[in-house]
Image 1 (cartoon, one colour):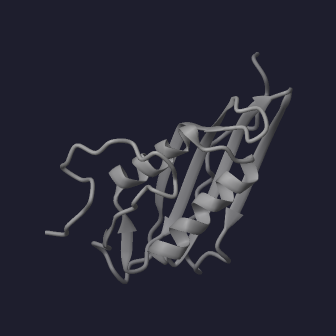
Image 2 (cartoon, one colour):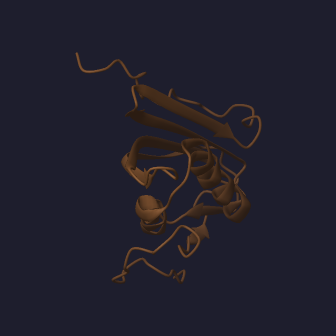
Length: 149
């Protein structure tokens, strides 16, 4: 059994992304090329200028190498942004970079589909490099913002 910080335990929401501990467990299919997707359609952070909430639909895709991220720890990490002030670009890219630095996947991409404030949606995309040859890359499935119709 792999020891984790959060799984099977009552864990409070971390006060900040910096305090959040992400858990990684061994890849159950090492040597197999496959894609893992996490979608967070109700992600929230705060505007660093006004302090008002910003909302996004995040989609994180990655091809594991030796480890995978444990989902409860990822949920807590993403939830810790509720009180974090950051521009959309910094938040989206920062999440992707932290996962890459700690998990060391073969490849990772993140799409941040931010809902409009001030009349303009901002979508932010980042990837760690070129995807491995032969990796199936489905569309992230988030439609461009079209307003209320």
